[in-house]
Amino acid sequence: MSAPLADQLRPKTLEEFVGQEHLVGIHGPIRKMLEGGKVTSMILWGPPGCGKTTLAKLIAKYVNADFIAFSAVTSGVKEVREIIKQAKERKKMFKQDAVLFIDEIHRFNKAQQDAFLPHVEDGTIVLIGATTENPGFEVNAPLISRSQVYVLNSLSESELEQIAKRTISFFPNHKWQTTSIKHLIEMSNGDARTLINAIELAASISKNISLKIAEEAIQRKAIFYDKKGDWHYDTISAFIKSMRGSDPDATLHYLARMIKAGEDPVFIARRMVIFAAEDVGNAQPTALVLATSCMQAVHMIGMPEASLIMAQTATYLATAKKSIASTEGISKAIQDIDEENLDPIPLHLRNPANKVMKSFGYGKGHTRYPWLVEKQTGQKIIQDYLPKNLKGRKYYIPDWK
Image (tube, rainbow, N blue to C red; front, side, top):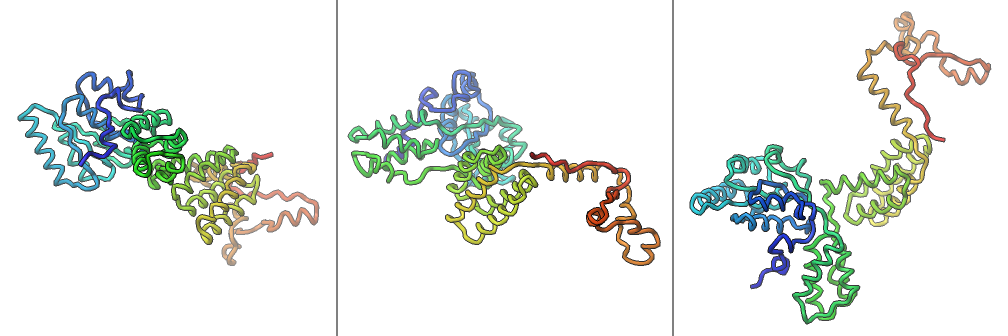
């Protein structure tokens, strides 16, 4: 049985490797490391299909090391110990280093990750971990401190085009319309594996690959979006910043990304409620009403129709007047609570709940409805509300036109 097409297409040299020029290009740190003939443990962090596994195999080949692939999903500490034992024996007998490649290293628990530490330190293994998650959150700090972290990017369309040409060469008897290849590249969304698999599937459907055949082969765009990882936080951050920057088009773009990736619509709506209070505030008070109604409606109606409600609310918030007066005001007030020695609440503001309290002056001299007295008499009521040592302090300063 022949190897999968994706494996057959794996480059044998750095010159054949597509993408990640910042790492493997002429001045790239990994290339320089390999040219020096010595590699250190590293974490390769990037989205699916960007070349993490391929790069790890090339690294092992360039330093003539034994490449050991290890899955964090299917293996545990027992398997780790067995591999370490084999690596030590091989190094002793053949003087050959071992490159241990751990796919999805973020899935290892602390005990499993800790099992590698002493063997990374003493040089028994060179550890190369691959992850789609931010290693700063998902990989143990001691392991990160002993490794270089390299960020890999999604492949560009021009880079995917190179891979598409190589893949198509495996099907010399097929005819490929230009529009079909372009469609497959666009829908692969920077993922080489998705592209290769789609081309292989298209070739199995017909020998004359039209746009229609290409659409059948890749029916849905491959959007990488981990709901608990960086892509989740980065996308919602871009969504909020676009609303804050009053750009309704960018707002809709990031909203569409989240919708297509299956983000929880209630989460999106909840963030818009917070935004309405934090960033629009009293410059346009109806924003909070609309955002709250949006969250309730999304909860009641559900997807896909809820996307229309979210789109209406998001564009309203993006184009609304903005004010952070309330946000900054409460922040300053809380800061004073934390930092100042607070004087007692003025007596006239206290609750005179009984005769004893009244005898101490609670509530004495307080004008309950100063606005009403001013309306009826035209006399300005001067009354202090802040504690004595904060008298005159300004927290709320309206900042909209």
